[in-house]
Length: 130
Image (cartoon, rainbow, N blue to C red; front, side, top):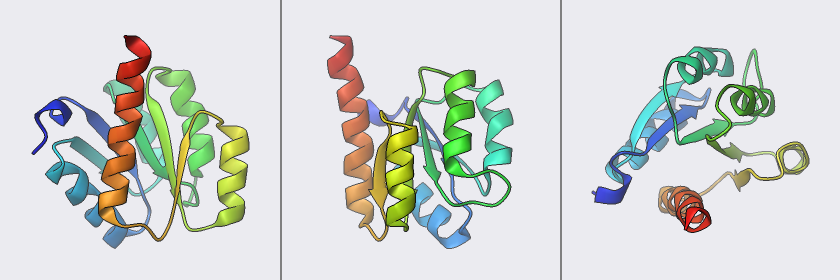
């Protein structure tokens, strides 16, 4: 477990149960504290009630897509970083246009790659604050 990740909190929004379980487990094994939900509408109250360092969201979800969730996250918690995961290239392009500071990771990806990208998001934040 990476000691520097221990205090980092991630909110994971992913509608596919198997993917959500795999992602949550990989991030927890890397030392992150993870809360997960299966839709964007369930993420909003968590963002309002708790601090998260990163919102990791699928883009295509029922009720509220990841881009709308990221916009609400930016309004509720501007310091929370945003990272998208998606299996759709066209959606990835839209996400990049709508959320230019957000990282987009395209499926399929190896769990190790996900953890590396999340680590990189936090490393970039650390460097920016120096």
